[in-house]
Image (cartoon, rainbow over all chains, first blue to last red; front, side, top):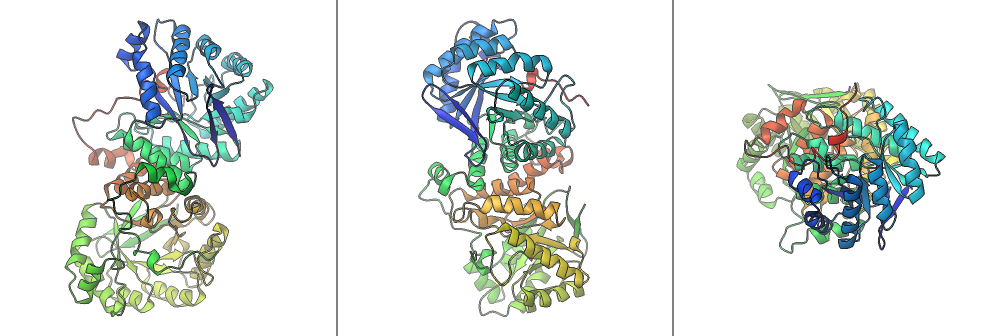
Length: 302
Length: 302
């Protein structure tokens, strides 16, 4: 059973097969959040801290921290954000940037074993990011695109993931420290996006035995009632083997879909978390279903 | 692609791979519904008619009709219910009884090609139900238990399904007219129930190439917020290959999970049904997600 262990100074989180799904809060990201971008650029990190606390309260097991602001000093901003978030929460972080200097600045101040987000299958990126991951003993998100872009062929994306795993091994990074992101396109733009993701997630688990993640909100972009689509996508991806996602735990439909999926995968032991979260002494629980089909059927023989 | 075609006098429904999921309304079933049972027994079928109409309005593509009332004349009641439901709706029916005389009475009055619910892997049941299915040119739900009960071993349940398919062939019934029910236990009683069902559904699709169904409400029996658990189960089962279910389309959480799953499987073309059902000119659709991860990523290359 593959286990990816990440940690803060005081807390370890394990992403793994047969374990509860790991929710990585997506909110600390200025891309598309104009106000947050302006505040961070001007040195005001109060919203970063508030978003960190709120997401952990909503159930995030980890937080993604991104400081990608055009024309800003991203390495300095990311390092500052990482330090502030670590000062107000104890969950492990995913340090998120496409700028390698920013990843390094974040890693340099991080306390614990971080998740580096991300490395792609592009040779130049691999040869710059993997040594950093190895140097800091971090885990890393591997995105299955390369110099040719994001292939629409799941077999090509699988091969890219495989290439990253092999290249990481050359740097002494075990495959258990690689969390593959199969890349999920908006379903409204590409009707095969879901099926491709599910098929790829299954192969990544069964053939490559790696943990997996994705930016879940993307799948529902442009659709009405999108949180329901995102939540349903997550449960279907979990059934296909996905073990973590970068998502928003503050959306009730998204979080409850993940919690119900944990119940159905048997990773919420005795449904304890579900029962705790949904406890209401006045709620009926036995209505319906009882009589329908099972009424006339025998119990399991074993 | 396997297709199971069922029909009423005027309408055909196709259960099939790559097609929208088929929702079979579960409500017309007196088991556990004391009032309905008393009414049906005394010849009052008004609630049966109302339940039929309401479920079709809620989106049911087919209706299950069960008249299992202790000490009642089930063959007569089931025939009457089938006729009345066919007089008020045009969807195909699943004729549901464990009493073979009742199945025959229902089939004798049914207009169109029915789904017979059900046959098990018990030799005596097979040799009585399959000739009926063949005689009326019906399709049939195959439940994967046999004389030894319901095995907890998914491999045994798969073998029972395989046995039913082979035996049906001896009676001239093609496997495309068999819809296998892998039997889903309550997850609150058996933590492996979900994973077993998902694994079995995949094998039934990939190795036996048959359509599948299940009584979905059963999985959440005894849990709080059970409709969310049932809906999430359905979406995960759909990701695992399930093509129909006996369920309650009047529960919003259950129906919207199925509709979102159709979007994500690519069977709701251009998300048209989803957009129609969720249209709200004031609702935001672009918020979140856009910026997060895909902002810095390329579009598909192909």
